[in-house]
Length: 188
Image (cartoon, rainbow, N blue to C red; front, top):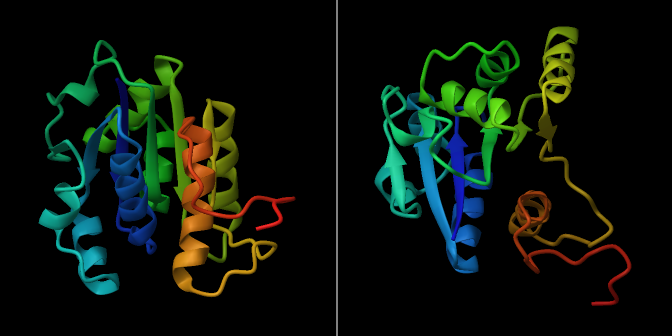
């Protein structure tokens, strides 16, 4: 069974992390772990009708971000990948600088040191040079950067269509088959 850790931070766009968890649950054969930061809990209430408990219920295991003794804090805890969706600039900075102040940043650091896939979905605009340097630094140490930038070749009609396109790209990067969005060259 695949094991994937999803982190949701306080950046705008918590629906991306929620939809990713929903799709991982549908895919089957994947054990999901979740780290929901305190800021994410606030953003959820502002942006969605989901409660933190509802989001936690989408994962097989939900870890307290303050618990540095939780399984994802150790390299011996086997998992295929971690995705921070959305990734705040604060979390990006912690990851890029190997600053393991909480479980989210520690788990990301462990993911990188173990040579596993780490996906960061940064949600900020506009970006200043410091943000850009942190993104480059994170990519240089092994992170994959997938910002939630909408595409329009699939002719989205709803916000869900736009969200699904980004989540489809995240699932592709995680090696999870999906048909959330029409692909380039598809006639559908």
